[in-house]
Length: 244
View 1 (tube, rainbow, N blue to C red):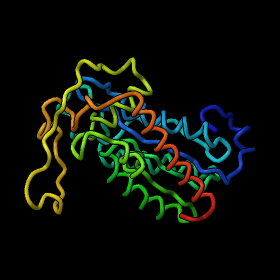
View 2 (view 1 turned 90 degrees about the horizontal axis):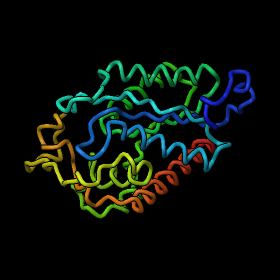
View 3 (view 1 turned 120 degrees about the vertical axis):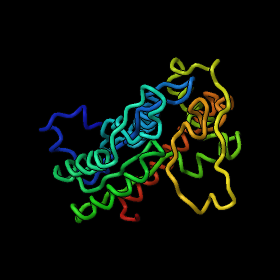
View 4 (view 1 turned 135 degrees about the vertical axis):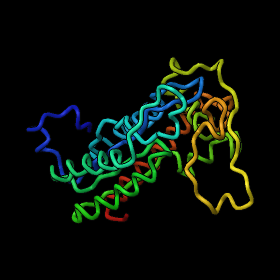
């Protein structure tokens, strides 16, 4: 079920046992070959397929396209919220659904830069709505998705194999396949895995891509999408059964 297609009186008849699915994304550069809308189009496509698979179990919000992307701002056209604004957007959107009686909410994240803010938002939702159960997940982190990749550990990041494949499956008309080119420098240093620093994208890429988009195919994109939907359906099931 899609919330945007209901009227408010119709919503009164919807069971409060469903899981509200709240996709969040971003509007940022994705190299020379993918459009600014990539993250939003991907997570919206995944949630649409989830809704088609288990329509009686979910109530889906439209994707929130404004995300946290200041690290992409050297590439013109990127639109971002500041961290506090972004956190407030998540908290207030989820809070509206709680006030409508929906106390099981799953935030589905489609952008790596949103993860830290999403986690803070989950903390604040727990504090402000202790009766609600609000969960967060990032579809691109699933093992079942990772098993499909072929471009190696540094090949499927931002605008790389994964996103190029998914966009070729969902919106092939928006993919400029002739512009695909490997880009990005892996993080160096012996202790890199034990230290965290937020980096500007232009520090470690030339064209705004982490990975190898030449490995992208529409067929692989369909497999990535199917794997993400399968995991999300399991997550929804475990939420509804009280297992998470």
